[in-house]
Amino acid sequence: MSTDTAWRYVNEGIEALAPLAPTLEEALAASGEDRRLLLDGTLVPTWRCAGLATEAKADPLYSGKHHDHGVNVQGLTATSGHLVFLGDARPGSTHDLTAARADGIIEAVTDADVETTADSGYQGAGGTVRTPVKRPKGKGHNGWEKQANSQLAKLRAPVERAFAELKRWRVLNLLRISPNRITAVLHALLGSHTSDLHSREGRSGMLTAHESMTQDTSSSSQVRKALSRSCLNSRRAQRNGDAGMYSPASAQLRGFVDARAGRMFY
Image 1: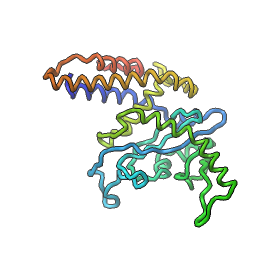
Image 2: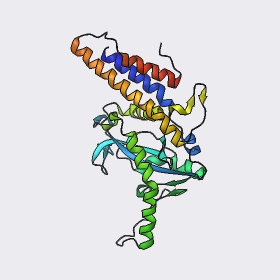
Image 3: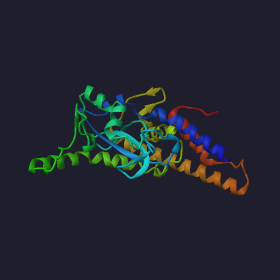
Image 4: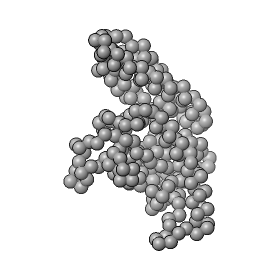
């Protein structure tokens, strides 16, 4: 199988899985009876892209907070640790609060009266977003402020686990694709985790976090294995000079996407 064919399978898989990622409205519905969600952002490392330079920012992908190039991605997580929403990929220099507002998260959770716990990077968000007590300039926190911040940090623990689970995908170790396609890739990865939430006829509502996390483990593993085998067979074909080598992994990936997204490639 040629490299072009392998990439075609990958791109078709991304196009089929990305629409399965939960929308912001579905994420708010996943807040449960207690109406609570967790908000956080992460930096997905990328190569430096000189083409994005502007007069205002010579290197917009560079994050001064992380001292690395990448894209800023905002996410909402259920209190059980299940990632329920990912925003658009924005330049790494974008502040977390700015990115969350651009994705409409702050306005949406406030209008829906969903209490959202976040870290100090979202101080000043207002609405229903709860952040740690800000330390007064030149002073330290008193006893109750330390205790309040400690309790808030414990509540935020599941969101760290959710992003850690997302970054188990090795492709997110360092993205080498166009920044314009990163959002689709991230939504496809999230869609692979939540594909069991949708029926063949359309979206059938969200399962509980425990049910979806249990059912999605095997499906995500299938995608990882199929993509890895497809790329491995492509490299073997190049070394052997056989561009038409049959790839069982490619057929497996196409069958998986067809079953999950209800889409036929041929």
